[in-house]
Image (cartoon, rainbow, N blue to C red):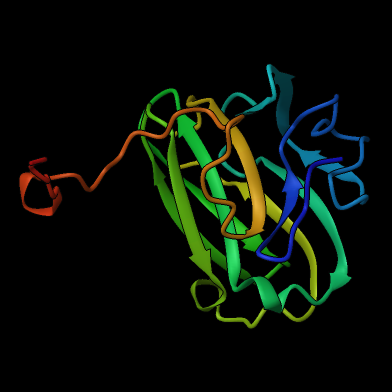
Amino acid sequence: MAQQNSSFKIIDNFEDGDGLPGSLNDLGYPISNYKSFIAVLNSEMIFEIENGRTDGSWTSNCGAKDYSIYGGVEIKARAATNTTMVIRMGKYNKTTINLSNTYQTFWLPWTNFDMNGTNIAFLSIGELSNASSAVTIDYISFGKKGADINDKPTTPTNLTSSNITTNTLP
């Protein structure tokens, strides 16, 4: 199981053979899938939807526990081609992220799901807008995981000359 601390709790980082349907996530609960193909290679989960569908998903049971202290969910992901992906907390609480072909880290506070994180039965990802796109996930966590030596590189999406500070040494 993955390292946990008080600021984040790994749902799954796809290490040591976890992440596949029938295995347990890093919280100790079962994983399932619907109308999708799942593979885990080099601590990354590759997710593809069955041909001709858009409703496929990967689902991680979360035990209907209170995760409110973590403030939301962080997910680090990329797609083979630009697509949107739905992240669900339970059946009715969902938000959508836009994926490109470079790793991006998404912080999704509970307000994005119209909830407070007190009773999360499961987290589900899927429902891609581009059914032919494969999605690769590095990790999913409750709370902000932040930089970790084992993380795949993230491509900064907000760097401009106006928000870079340089210091001149004497």
